[in-house]
Image (cartoon, rainbow, N blue to C red; front, side, top):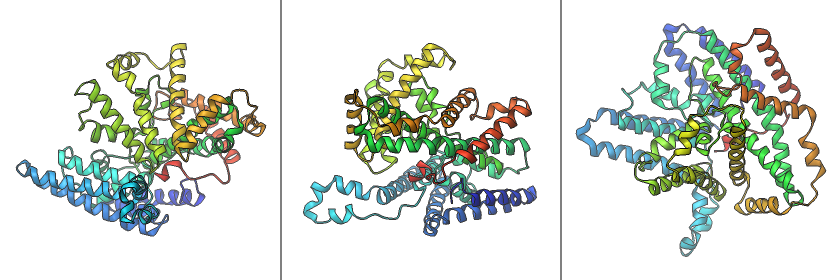
Length: 483
């Protein structure tokens, strides 16, 4: 069931009504309701997924509880427990997501065993959201080992944390130490939080259904006809994909975080207007925050972070970003995308972080210097996105080659005319304007809370009408549900 479906919205309204109808003194029944709703929601994708999720939940909870019970005198046992869980989790990802990928890569070494053909063609049923909730369980077990979690939560609270349906299939990757304490508090209906959730959901639907799903038409046609297009059209298609993936994924995150607020739960922020970044470092502090912070906290820092000299810092950065790319899928395009994103950090690391400190002191305002650096970062990230979007490394390099050599070739008229329908062009400009106005807030529409009621409702109505009249009837699923 997709968030934008009518049946989901009706079910969500009924769930909220029942949830807040339960007295706050019976908070445990609210949690049972969230548990049931989440597993029903997940089962609608495939009923077998729920059994796998429950197994991961029980296993990680047991490891975390065991770690909390052992004191520092049992350090070897504690290391063995956390190490075992991490090996099992990583092995699970390798088995479900990367078996055929690594079998193909190791084909020259496995050929004489006569098994590579079987392995490379063996595709297991991949549970949707596996990468997200495995990372949540790993962070819980590691935090239990580090004792950054004060006490072992109740099993019910942990089950709700792992299965909470807004973040289950595509994040944010919430941390148990921040999420579970909210379940332990007695909750009362807060009108401001509820309205804030609805406002963020509306903006998320606008980004997904109007911006992302219309840009995908342009992107699809450019990627399928790029040998016949000129440099301008190919670059335009690549930039359209940059905006599409942002509007799609941040739209999902806005909807998910908004739904959480409807139930009185604050989830981790996932985007902070990344395309207004002046440096690559700023971009990655603002893009998919829950994932980048996860890799920083649980991989980059344990590898040594930036504490072991410039060369080691560069190596650690490239390792983390390459693995981050591989996390997205079993394709060399993702690996190269991750490596390139890490490579963009090298100039910053070589100057000792001076540029990073410089831009921290300069506010994000509409100045010539800011705009130029924003444009340069956007173009650099756009080149990386070409590998992310392409189905193969060959296609990515071929598209880049056409971009640089088809300077004088006439473009396909259908692509150009598709780019400039007046209404969509105005909506796209409005989207950029909303993003700019809301850049100092949690999301694009958050700044409206300080405006007059007439102004707020004018914006709400315009967004709702644009969704109803300009949404694609056959819009695709959210991009990050594939990861």
